[in-house]
Image (cartoon, rainbow, N blue to C red):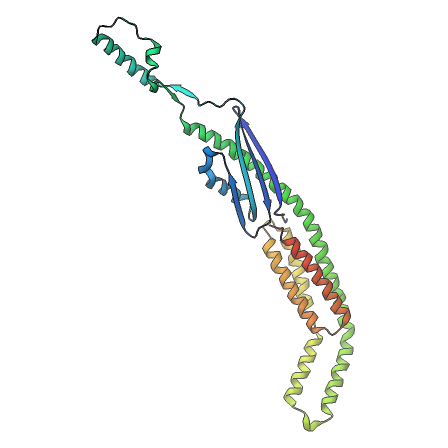
Length: 293
């Protein structure tokens, strides 16, 4: 299955009055390029985000934005430091006894000491925020991948149509070539006969090379066989679960090379026209492959 590199995904996660949302956009790129925007308090988690993305995507220019909002007014959770309360209460009692004070120790006296009430450990809150954002990121990635797969399916239909058109033209070329072989052989005999008219001027070695060259030029069987083999591998690669963009590009280059050889060997206008049509299809395929992972 081939995947497009273009897509969009959105994901959300909500818990305990907080909502994390992630948006991810992807466009074409030869490599995996990541631009990540995280909430300020989670900026140090960028490495973790990259690892998550790299596990799911292989190519594309990726822009990922993560936001963290609270549905209620955000206030740091506070806790009572019981050990500090006991310590300061004892300290105040000792002070009271040492100066013979009759005033009772109240909560107001204890609240003078800032250590009595402290924020809850930030590490616990940060871990909660990260887990929430991680869920949102994974959902956004899954939605992006689904969209890329859907677009990839549409691209696959077009690619299969074009690669099949190429094979049809190759079959036409083979048919034309078989019909032309007798004609080309007669032309070859005529050239050899002309060379043999003046035996004094004949270079036997040159004559032998000329015959071999002309005979090879008649045969495009190997090129046609290789193109059909590349076409089969092209289809098989599209069905693979692995990223296939680079392999498909390589196969297109190989088919183009074989078509050039056919064009160079052929001395027939119909075959030349068919090779031009094949090259046009290859160019359109190459354009489509720029968007495949």
